[in-house]
Amino acid sequence: MAVKVFESVGKFDLALAVAGGVVNSALYNVDAGHRAVIFDRFHGVQDIVVGEGTHFLILWVQKPIIFDYHSRPCNVPVITGSKDLQNVNITLRIPFQPVTSQFPHIFTSTGEDYDEHVLLSIMTKILKLVVVRFDAGELITQRELVSKQMSNDLMERTATFGLILDGVSLTYLTFGKEFTALMIFNIVFLLPPPQKSL
Image (cartoon, rainbow, N blue to C red):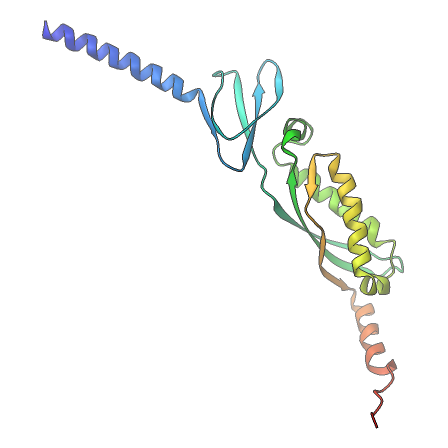
């Protein structure tokens, strides 16, 4: 009698373990600062964005794609030409974050690594288009205007991809050797000497 009881308890434990494993594999977590998009094998990417917490999914049919929506920086170094054909080595620093409601669109249009696909190509293109509008001297003296123009153009373009920029700043700006040597020559030899005060 005791053997039969142990056998039935063993079968019950095994069935409970299997059921627990199935239920556990049908759960997924979305951590703080993240959102999920559900890919359904029959219907594609669902339009619903899933918030933080523990959620159910249909095994072998649905798969969660987890996105981080924290603001993070992207540094873009570019070598391009100015209006007066000077070589310009410029680096742009752009903190960005995705619009959480746009995650289904972002995933279907560019994928999980959207920041590498979209941001780098857009930033490089816009940066070159803005720099070519200014000559080398203007890039130095009107740096704030250049930065503002880049920011406006980038914000307009990245909005179509569901990204928000938190500001744009020029962190590095240098010119080719010839132009730099000419600037130093002008500073050393062409500036008038300081006047003595009486």
